[in-house]
Image (cartoon, rainbow, N blue to C red; front, side, top):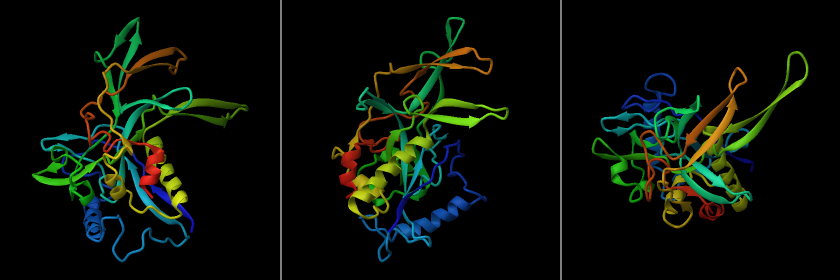
Length: 309
């Protein structure tokens, strides 16, 4: 049976306390949440719906395997009760992907990895301009506590209470895991297009954020589907069962001295030099164990493959 991974991708945006990213008309997120809470009561410990085949079969014969949403591109909004999160990534049925900055060597091997949080200093007249010493925050990973969903069973005992409590109740916390999403350490891609007056133009760009983190996990999930000849269903129960087993790299704060020097051209064709610091989020921080920047951590792809068996 043909299979695919459903990837829901979007940009994190500032949220008002108590609201989780309205998906359309006012109250839609809350309505969907009520429906999903009923579905969660049917979810067993293995991530399957009792008496309901998973994944569901769609008319075109395509199986929906898992919903993956990147929680990134800006810190979650602070409130008096903590940090709010976005919808649909806050849903317990969705795997929320946090962001990291990843360094690899010339052979493509992992060297080091930090939580995603980027600051920027700009060189002007031989002086650095911006908030010293790490620059002005421009983007980074997101995380926080749901105001709609209670803590799912798979997070119990793994997510610290201090990071999953809202109004005195344990709630759904995110992200679940993290993958490379920093444009400084992301993927370079090439765009080519025809000019109106003839000829072509080619531009190399860095890609990160939603366009990188969510598809990376989608690709790993697709490989697991192929390897084990079937859908993995909702991923989160299996991911949390693997906490502390070596499947995930536990990301902790760096020494604070990591940065990337970038040169580019402005609209006038002049060179612009920027120093972009890494691992400096505006409001969140990595920590040992589960944290609200990277969740369980970044997966080791080969170990994750067997964890999803």
